[in-house]
Image (cartoon, rainbow, N blue to C red):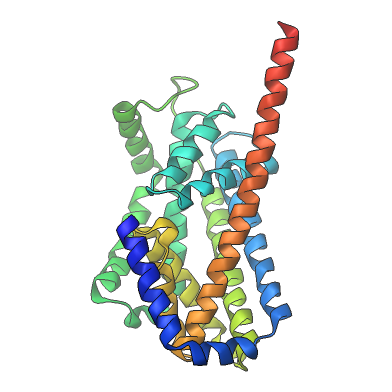
Amino acid sequence: MIIYVTALIVVAGYFFYAQRGKFVEILAAAQLRVILLSLAGSVINTIVYSHIHRIIYRGLGTDISHWEMYRVIYVSRLGNYVPGRFWFAANYYIFSRKLNIDGRKIAKTYIIDNSMLFFTAIICALPVIFLLPPSVQKLFIVLPFAILILIHPKVLNRFIDTLSSKVRLQENSQDGISGPNYTTYIKVFGLYFVIWLVAGFSMYVVLLALQQVSIKVIPICLSASASSTMIGLLAVFAPAGLGVKEGIGVLVLSQVTSIETAAVVVAILRINQVITELVCGSISAISLYREEMNRKTITTACS
């Protein structure tokens, strides 16, 4: 991974240096206040994304507050910036268990969430599928059917039971884990479309801050956001999809603007994402640390 990041920095640095004249012109004409407005989109999506997980947990019979869920999600997402792509999943499991959530419910929530993320992203990316490599096009055709099979209640329950027996997920009881019902799936499905709409509009806002564009390009921005995020997640060798997500974003967005402008847009959006996740993750980590210290103080005082 270190070799990949080093190579990415060298290639990106050379590209920006070679085209520095054009980039200076683009940034000189940029409207800073409009760009800052796009940061609001990142903040909105952190709330919606956290709420999706809460809805799934509640559909599985686990009552969890908005703040508890938010902290679990964003302290876990700090793991995306650590070498190794498994840290988010590991942190998600660890901090969810600290809330005494059954290990099978944690696994089920994680699978349903990612399945719906990919499923809705593919739908949003369909208008630009012809721009993607043939292997990715085939994946976009096969994956939705695989997802629909996986999240079917009977199939998912059997998969979770098998997973539990193999890795020994910590269980709060020996009872089976039922749910969620189809209403939960519909809610999650709808909220993920909200996420893609906000992400697409944020991309459009940044593009608009750099040049005059028609509102008709919003569907392309939506497809660029969804397809780049999904493929970035699938690129397990890239920390937080770094480089891969931006490359796909530039590929799609360059259909309505220059490559240089598209590169600036995806770079700004990546900076927005990193700032938002680091701030939210840090606040969550501090809150969890203080809560743990208070709990230890009370335990010591009682003993």
